[in-house]
Image 1: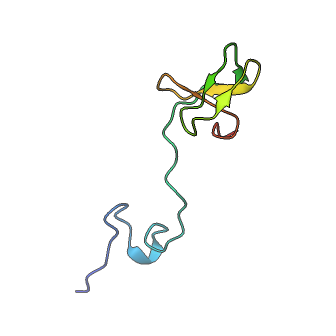
Image 2 (image 1 turned 30 degrees about the vertical axis):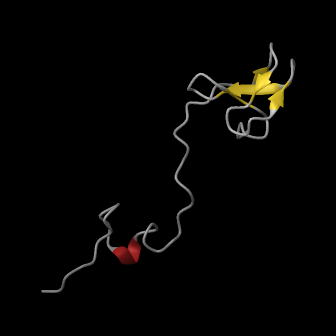
Length: 74
């Protein structure tokens, strides 16, 4: 009887597992991002701390803050 090596994360055989073979990208973002909209007030991006102005495109980060266009993944 031969022992098959299995991935600890996916439980697939290591020869067929993208995780073990290094073929996966970074883990997906689990943020619940809001839809982009024009800022009504000036503020700061919670990721990069850059200031955004009224009418700049921003989006909610899902945790009570707002993200600028560069950090908002759109």
